Length: 121
Image 1 (cartoon, rainbow, N blue to C red):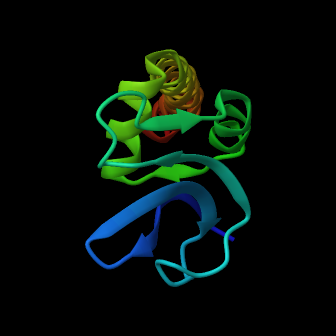
Image 2 (cartoon, rainbow, N blue to C red; image 1 turned 180 degrees about the vertical axis):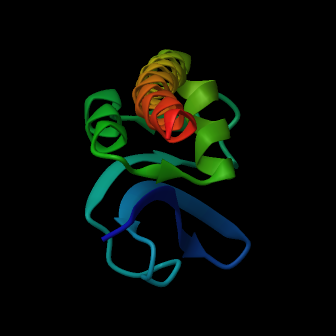
């Protein structure tokens, strides 16, 4: 099941509020969600968003992806979460690149050996 962190619309006509939720990608915009992570009220002047950082990090560590709007909101409310998430992604990229390089070297060495045997025949 692919999980996304996105905004779930609620409220009344011309006065929408949003919940930041973790939900399955195949669920409707306002459908069921797995976990409520916070809320956002665009009509409030100050303190218009609240976020449970612990739950958000939990879902991000499980592999949940963020929508563009959710990422912007999280970056504004809790920039530390985005920084941790980006650092973790970069570390993973470096680790995978090193693993790929090692695999290439391993596969190149047997090719050289087999190539020299063929030329000897």
